[in-house]
Image (tube, rainbow, N blue to C red; front, side, top):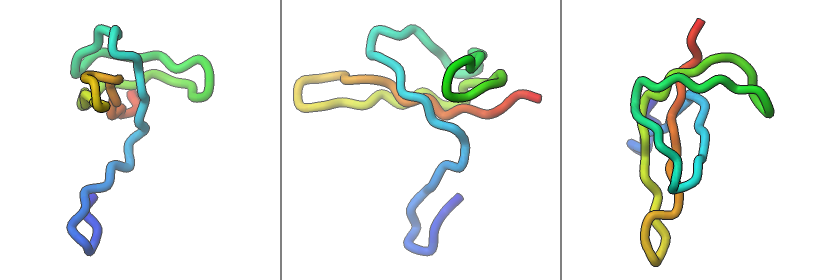
Length: 64
């Protein structure tokens, strides 16, 4: 979704995972704590701090 200011806002669930995680788009994740259900990884976004890769943010989509 795009706001009036032109910002892109994701309405899908977002999950942060450590930098050592091995995950790819189209992988499936099963939520057991904090969220339940099965989700497909739509996008993998690397996030950096001042020294390098810090973690990944995964944009998820619920699978019905």
